[in-house]
Amino acid sequence: GKKSRLLYGISELEDVLAGVRLTLSPQAFYQINHSQTENLYKIAKKFALSSSSRKTLLDLYCGVGSIGLSMADSFEKVIGIEVTPEAVENARCNAELNNIDNAEFYCINASKVAEIIKEKQIHPNVVILDPPRKGCTVDVIDFISYIKPEVVVMISCNPATCARDLALLESRGYMTKEITPVDLFPRTTYIETVCRVIKKKK
Image (cartoon, rainbow, N blue to C red; front, side, top):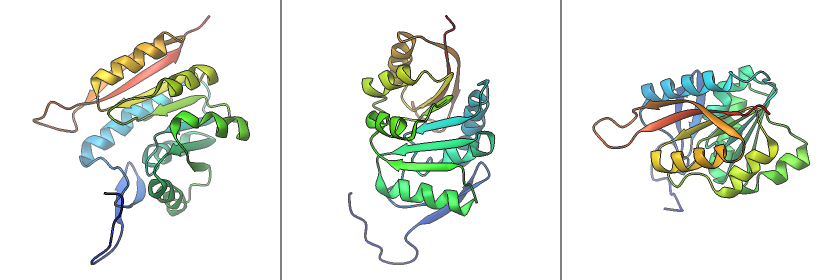
């Protein structure tokens, strides 16, 4: 639902994931398979660090900031974009909680992130995508091809929309180099996939 009412106890959960302490509101998205999520984040970080420049990381669909904050020690700046206000507030609190001062979080739809990028004059070297099951909008794919990051790391819970979005990126000058599946949902048909996509050299 859109509204939550505390009946008893504390209003938020706390967890430690990939070395980062996290506060989670009821409205925030969070993976429930803890050990496999840590494996997924390790793979995503390895892919992100394949970039020759580690100046700016743009984390789209960032949720409570768990992915971006887990990589903040390897980049000069982390920018997180999320549409859920409660999750953005959690992300900002989580940065403070972990004494991470090189991460900023904005409450805006991922398809409108170009406004923030232009305003702040940000030039991301690496983009992390962790979209919902419906995948990325064409606006987001077009935006990525416009800012031309060296590396795009896509984390997807839907192989069908993942394949579609990878094809769109490839049609705009990118190449899929690695795909690693991570099973967060044993005994089901669902699978998470981590993809490393690089800008083609002219």
